[in-house]
Length: 120
Image 1 (cartoon, rainbow, N blue to C red):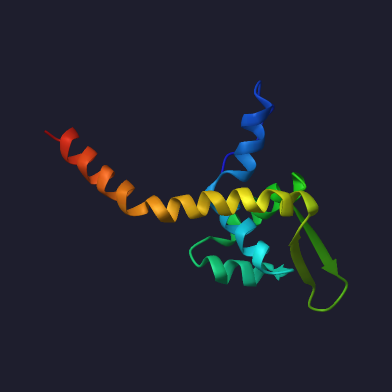
Image 2: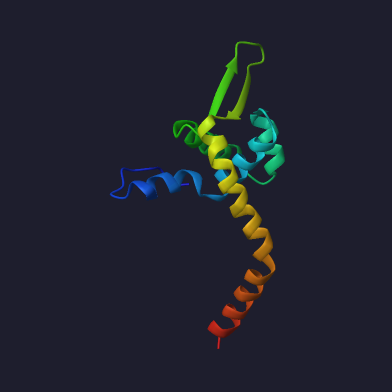
């Protein structure tokens, strides 16, 4: 995930934060759970590195999509949840996920066809 810089296009700046694969999956996960801990999110995603998870959570928090609550306990406990803005975004994210699942087979066929035509 690249760092955000001030873009001439504000829409591009917003989409950089919420339209990458990890952000979409994290928003979807948190839509099903009231709150989740860092390790729970990581386990649910499976193949995300701790560094990428940290960066993505920080990005979503800085955009106001999710909130981070730290409890003063030993060991420290941190929980993440969607903000109102994140909950407002959730149906759009889920629609995109639904579309991807519904079209996945055709997209895979298109990719194979494209690759075979490109190699000729």
